[in-house]
Length: 589
Image (cartoon, rainbow, N blue to C red; front, top):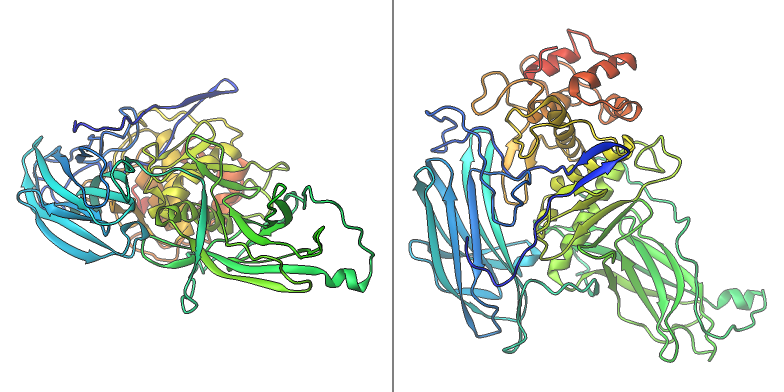
């Protein structure tokens, strides 16, 4: 293992609920059943299960597995103008050809000396954490089985602020990409002694305006937008002296409003609206605590309009700023290790006039590495639009359960659902599918009232490898949901790994068969609920539809049991229809 200055704690969570064991669940990055030794989709030695941890931060007992392992570190933090040594080790479990080894620096760092054998190049990058571009040191090479190679290079800091070094090893498979990566988060100081390993973890941030010609784009325009109820939001409150107000037209004219839009930028550089996020108007008092003037939620385009009583005790009008927080009654994104949601504020506009509307404009976080908190929040909103019902995640509940996501800009904890909360690594929100996958585990816990189906042989588990009927059901269902939400049959990991869940069928290289394979369960559900037919798949029904209805009504422990529950619910299970969709994914009932 490469020596690190920072110590990263790793643990596995097992929860006992009502006599049942609820085991931490999460989708491993990669974890392919068989590996392509030369990018050809064939392995002359036969199927091999990838069991390597993708980096040392992945827990020993965790689900994440790849055919590669990458371990990266830097010898010390650095300020602007200072240099440091970056060292990383890449190991391949099996003999492999055409392996891409890449070490990327954001725009505020540069390679002073690239590692021997790696070629330096620069590339524009839309990902906000790259600050406009990356400087890459890379090679394409072969590995012997079990071989590891250590690379050493020197970097220099060009500008202050957060920086994220990413080292990655990847190889193409016939049905996707296998990759492993390690991240090194840094804070580059403006002067010596003001730098650190890791990222600044404050949950309070400011915001900047978005250019007027930038048109926000939704992630799921194919889904109808839904707005949450504002019931239960904090009521206006403050400690200013009460000003007597007559209930007259003049008093009504003293009302003022604040408007704007709240946006973020995703890993592809696309500006998107943040929907259903708590938004509050505040009065910035200098002599007393700040006063809450009004609260609400951002709308379906990220917009808000808050109106409030503008009367001040000194008759000057309120000094107004807007605060947005990553929470609502149904979901919340908070800083790992705390219960603090992330909040973002606008500048303060002093002494707003009675009857006026202050336009704060289209805004986004100032700090690029806070975009991922909003991306995670937005991914939950994507799923909310897809899940039937408009009150709770579980439409049969009368009291809603809030989904809690833990994330930090330098978090190494995740990706999994455990202890009734979701835990995400720093770059996990770069894959909205990963966020929705873990959300699905949370929703299953909600629907099943925290009863966990038995899931033997599930740690680690591989998408295309045999595990158990319980593990395959729990994980396969959680792969089908994001595929349906985003209308994308490829599962896509933050590392760049990807795997086609729909096209594998009988005799597909690297895939085991049957309902003990989670990828087969996911593929069967995809074929059941889409209109893209191939092979024996000649059936299609709307998603979430009947599948979700049966899921809500029963505590299915396996896919076979789910199928019996579907039949009991009166939905089609005929041999010439739905069963052909299952058969296409090698599930023969």
